[in-house]
Length: 107
Length: 113
Image 1 (cartoon, rainbow over the protein chains, first blue to last red):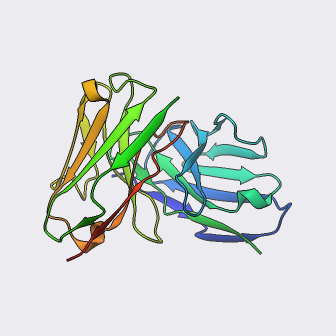
Image 2 (image 1 turned 90 degrees about the vertical axis):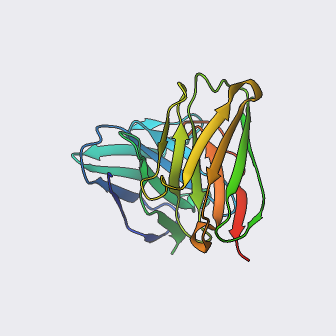
């Protein structure tokens, strides 16, 4: 199975900060990488697909990038509504695998 | 519009079988895959398995010996069956297309005697 190593597990940040969350894939997944946001008590929401493509309705302060086997989700200027858990998911091959998650919280 | 809704028992006894249904609307099961994802209380997301548009299935490696996913396209329903349930299977179970668009609201399943 492909392992997705996500870091950090917790990220305290201030409003207006630029923040980055990273997932490293244990083998080649090309651009088959998605990012999800999940707020407490809610179902997850797709934010990024194809490693770099913004999903419909997602604010432009969110972006995705890739460097080799490292995939990053960046928020350019943190807003209060962005406080949530974030997960990466590889869909290159089955079984699909999620990263362990990052809790983004106010410092 | 696209909707998915999970249904099933909230409480299952250890060693028993879990049966969940995902009823979808707004899209065709023969053109879209449907995935099951679960989340134990306070923990992260875990991909459980999927039924693809052609009807084939894939499963989480750790669960595949206990798991079966099927569908009834005429009723727009996807089914999950998992046997030999243990307390570690206590979780919210979501069905989703995993793409853009809504997930189901999830169903909380507790494994307890």
